[in-house]
Amino acid sequence: MSNDGPLPARAAERASRREEVQRAGLPARSALILREIVEAYVETGEPVGSRTLSRRLPLSLSPATIRNVMADLEEAGLIYAPHTSAGRLPTDRGLRLFVDGLLERGALTPEEEEAIAARCAARGRSIEEVLEEASALLAGLSQAAGLVLAPKADAPLRHVEFVALGPGRVLVVLVGEDGSVENRIIETPPGIPPSALTQATNYVNARLAGRTLEEARRAIEEEIRQARTELDALASKVVEAGLATWSGGPSGGALIVRGQARLLADVTALAQLEAIRTLFERLEAKETLLKLLELAQASEGVQIFIGSENRLFETAGVTMIVAPYRNARERVVGAIGVIGPTRINYGRIIPAVDYTAKVIGRLLG
Image (cartoon, rainbow, N blue to C red):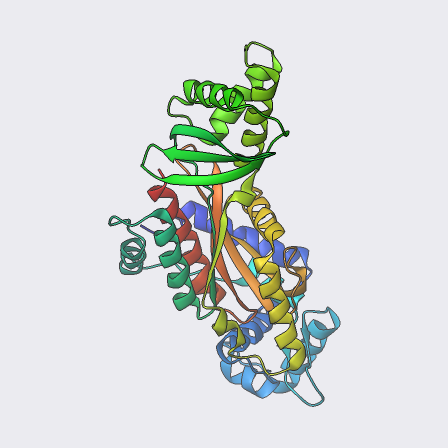
C-alpha cells in the first residue's frame, strides 16, 4: 500500500507545492538551486559551493550564474554562509520552503511497510512494549531520536475500591477488564468515615459497567451536577476527588524517547551541546506531554517543526517530525515521530513516521 495516495491526489499535492514556491516569489531556477543546496546539506552536512552545484545540477549553468542565484537566495534569507569564503547552507526558512514546496516525498516499499508492521505487531506484548519498539524502530530508520507519546490508560474498568490510608488520604485501586491493576492516592477532606468510602465504592462500581475512566467521569459528574443521586456530601467529595485525579487530561500519558545519543553524534560546538541538553530537560518536563498532544490533535497528518520555528522546543539545529495516532473511536490519543538534526532525511522519514502512526492506530482499534 502506497502512502502517496492515488495519482490525482499526488498531482494535486505537487500543484500545491508549486503554488507554495510561486507565493514565495521563487523563480524555477532559484528553486532548483535551493533544492540542490538542501539535498547536499542533508547528504553531507557541509556547505556547498557554486562549482559543486554546477556538477550536481541537471541544467548546464556556469558557476558565475549559480553564484548570482545564490546571492539572491541569501538576500531572501533562504541560505547563508557559515563563514567567509565558504559555500552556503540552508536557513530554517530555506528548509521550511524546501519541505513545504520542493520536497519530493518518497513512498515506502511494500517490503518496508511489512517490516514496520512486523516490528510493531502485538504478539502478546503490552501496548507500552509495542510503543517502545516503534520508538526504537524510528530511531534506527532516521539515525535520530525516536519519540512516542503513549496514551494514558483508556481501557474499560471492572472494579474500583476506595481504601483509607490516613487523615485526608485515600488509596484508589482500579482494576481493568484486562486484569490490569493501578493504585493511585487522592487527597480528601479529613474526617471521612469508613461508611463514606464504602458508599463511594458501591456508587462508582454500579456506574462503571465496562466504561473507561473518561466515560465514567462524564456520566457521574453529570449525575452529581443534576442532583439525581442520593450520595451524601462526604462520599460525593471522595468521588469527585477521585475522578479529578484519574481523568486529569493527557498528562496521564508517558513520553518514550529512544536513541537520544544519536542527537549528540554530530555536535561539536558547546552551544549546540547545551541546546541538546536543554531539549532533553524539556522532553522530561510534564508540560511537554500536553504540548505534544495539542500539536497532534491540531493536525490531520505529519507535522514538521524545523529549528527555531519549532513551537514545542525552539531549539536551533533540531527538527521534529511527528504524526498523531488514533484509537478505534478516531480520537487522537498519542503521537509518534523523531527528533533529529535539521539535516535529517525528510523524504525518507516523513512517510516512515506517517505509516508507523497508522500501524499503531490499527493496533488500538
